Image (cartoon, rainbow, N blue to C red):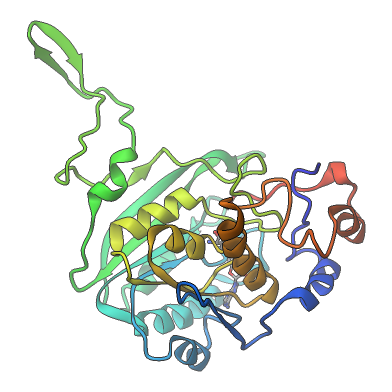
Length: 330
Ligand SMILES: C[S@@+](CC[C@H](N)C(=O)[O-])C[C@H]1O[C@@H](n2cnc3c(N)ncnc32)[C@H](O)[C@@H]1O
């Protein structure tokens, strides 16, 4: 058994080449789900005409995006180039949203480079007709940048709204535990600590999320080969708070298909895309695997295990089974 039998596809061109024939959509292609009407496309999120063809006139209630952060896991662009690239995909996304809709972006902040790209991305967002609503921090269990520096044990999530979309706080936010006592109450002569979280719909939305486990190989939801997978729980919180059953949710950086699966679980429809056909196929297979088995990922297996046993994949990547890499942390 291997912790992560599928090597990182972004770093292993031979592995990617071997998996491509098993991918049912090629660049430009779209897969439509007969059961729930989800769609998966292999397109570039910055390509306005490809996005428009994919959306086919439909508008989304909610956009979730988790773009490459321009940090170590990806080909590094200069910040100006990264912001120009971001402007293109944000423009395309905003065109596809309903008048009352929500827009969430996960972003990194490199402590060794003026916290980029976060600050320049925030400034970029001021160009668009959209309101900032919250700056959420999700706590990670394992950090990155641990060598000589502060360890970043956080992920930044920017939340914007257009118009006045609904926000269903009771759906998921009541899970965030209180960790500070804050104050005491005397009830019947007994001192009671205030650690209990209210469950009503009048609680304030917490924007520090400390209750979400990062994905790693011990979790059922782990998708081997995907180095930047977001936890289903964080995506579920976003979807249930900012959309209703039957709404359309979009995410054009699909990767392991977290938004697709979370939308399926919450009864929403999802249009998702990735520039890489292998990630499109993984996203589709993850949905199918869930429907067939009830499992949210492969844990120690992987999406292509029928066609490519783990040993063959690892040998191709020049890795011994013991050296199988774990996903990076963002
Ligand atoms: C950080 S990952 C998204 C992780 C995802 N939220 C999950 O939970 O699995 C970013 C993804 O964006 C894809 N990507 C990069 N540039 C893209 C582009 N221009 N258009 C569409 N997808 C792109 C990458 O292939 C990668 O799969």
